[in-house]
Image (cartoon, rainbow, N blue to C red; front, side, top):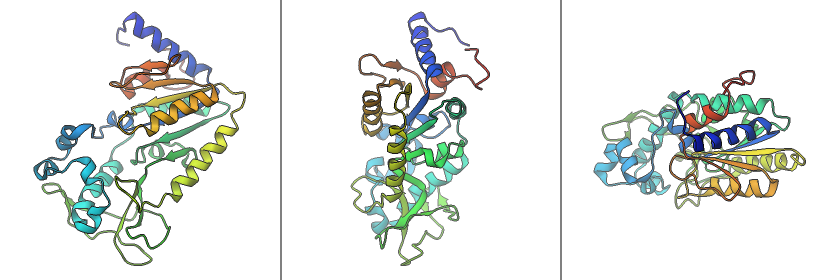
Length: 287
């Protein structure tokens, strides 16, 4: 292990001890969780445009592109953006930190639950039970009608979106609604989005609420990873859960690691922090 200065080392030791003693884990995650898997960091226009130069040439920011209006105005552009991300998320393997969290949660009496703003499906790919995950902004791996003609949400597994990376435009057939034949879109909450069908996320949220009700008397630790303050949904969920449950909050963030009094701040990336506070296997207690 690399040399760690004493103040930082004591905070890591404090976090590691809290996780070892935990009887249930609530894992809350933002975009920073996927960066160490090789997923692009969309923080700020510069980061987004470095990942997608064609959109820089068009002067389109992430916020401008992540808008349902493009599916009506320019569906090839809309599906170029989301199709490229869908293809990327299908290819990228989750990093080691996912395994460490899953392993620790497996031996907790109360188990674990995940609350994430990420739409990439990385937790499912890493083996986390699908009924223990809330995707508060939906999933790019699921589709809905653009209109929408109904409340149906269906898997995108059979869709293959071919994208011309020089222009970031879809050049293959676009997904269609199986009911009305209109254009389909990802079941993802976008900016200015009044047509997102939230039913799947609603069922997930109900599952989380039921799980939280079962935790009375258990030592709960909230591990938050890579959640920024620009869209604070995950951070607020972490803090609210810690307050209501009397839980310890461990906030992992290399740029915005500030925490409420009495909680633990790790100013680190996901893999570095998780490998510092969690063993690779539950029978490996050497830190």
